[in-house]
Amino acid sequence: MPKRDNISMSVIRRLPRYYRFLRLLQSKGVVRISSTELSSKLGLTASQIRQDLNCFGGFGQQGYGYIVDQLCAEIANILGLSNCYKTILVGAGNLGQAIASHMSFESEGFHLIGIFDNSPHKIGTIINDHPVLDIAGLDEFCRKEKPVMAVLCIPRESVGPLAEKLYTMGIKNFWNFSHYDLAMKYPDALVENVHLNDSLMTLCYRISNSGTQ
Amino acid sequence: MPKRDNISMSVIRRLPRYYRFLRLLQSKGVVRISSTELSSKLGLTASQIRQDLNCFGGFGQQGYGYIVDQLCAEIANILGLSNCYKTILVGAGNLGQAIASHMSFESEGFHLIGIFDNSPHKIGTIINDHPVLDIAGLDEFCRKEKPVMAVLCIPRESVGPLAEKLYTMGIKNFWNFSHYDLAMKYPDALVENVHLNDSLMTLCYRISNSGTQ
Image (cartoon, rainbow over all chains, first blue to last red; front, side, top):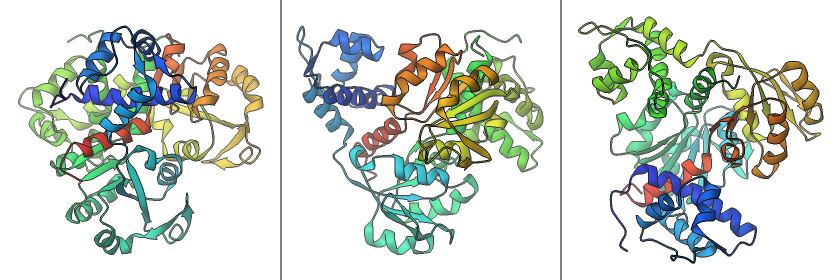
């Protein structure tokens, strides 16, 4: 089955979940899984999973299920996880440090090549084997290394001028932890926002409107 | 207009964004905003915003727009941000430290009352004025303080037994940074997941399928 264009974001956002779960099965030595078992473990219907995977050509065989290794490799391939998109992280505060230490960029398609901050207290410190570099050297670094993605862990009010600089230097992909609306400002940029505050406020709403408190 | 029941999650998830933007306007001293201006700044249609707010009774006046203070207070009220849901955070690693230091729980409906870890290196250290407590004392703490929400910043493999303990002690609300599927295990629990890896993999997919690299 050919790969479809215009795949919806909700399908795409389910792929990492499939991938994580298949990796877990792999680590447990599971070789094959039926579509029924896969779906019940993921809390989705078998038909939903089949439909999702059909967007990318379809895998598995009726009555036989999925070969874990194979499906895992296929999804990694669809997600593009073997890429090594050169990435910089800006802002080595608490959040930036956590992201730089906690995330395995390399296994998720990215290669973290530099961490930047403007604070003399942070410049020169080491986070996960990366020395924190002076933001003053950002231009030169970007001209030389040509990163394609920037992780923004700086406060909203600092993002504007920095994003402008990064954008001008050719960085069009952002993993944005700030509340600055990059997508509005740069419509041709690719922005993946992580709004932790929004998530917390949503939880507050849900608790307030439930019987779980 | 009466408040509607069964409001969709996509409406609810837009509220924090409205709220953040209105707070920003407040901080700039903006008193009133037209629905057209509000919508263009948020990248939504005026009709979408009106529909969303109508779910909660409707605010603003045709041709007059919204009073910023008033709408902001109404949305805070809808979200339940004046609650002080007693919250504990488990896992004082990089991520837990970042969450505890970076988030303003108090302005988002929660009151962080305890941080727990099992590592002797972390117990007793101070994060954002909170001493990290020994996880061994969790039962007693919960019996005494009766927290209603737990932030889970521990690895997937440690979540199972811990979640069981928390659930048994009456905690039914979770802000979950791990990849453990709490919602599947405890269908009556309220779980807000933050899957940073999924977000990063989604970005990888989007970059791979665009011309932005």
